[in-house]
Length: 80
Image (cartoon, rainbow, N blue to C red):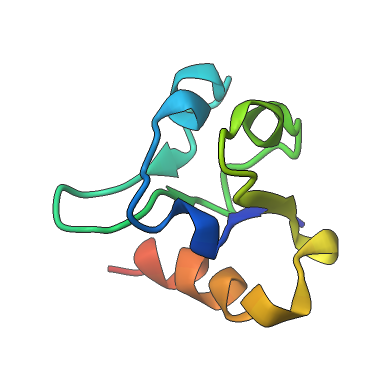
């Protein structure tokens, strides 16, 4: 399991989560509209979710159904 960044991050891309991540598993590119959590590196500490100003980060099991596709979107970002 890992944390997942969902739709509320799109267009906001606040880097508070990046700054607090103890394992540096949150990444993005200049062209991407949001941040992504590497599911292979995430240690499930939840610190990122606590500081997200738009409440876009969810534990995978708690991800709202309307944003379920973001589990695959986050994982796909790291396959490139």
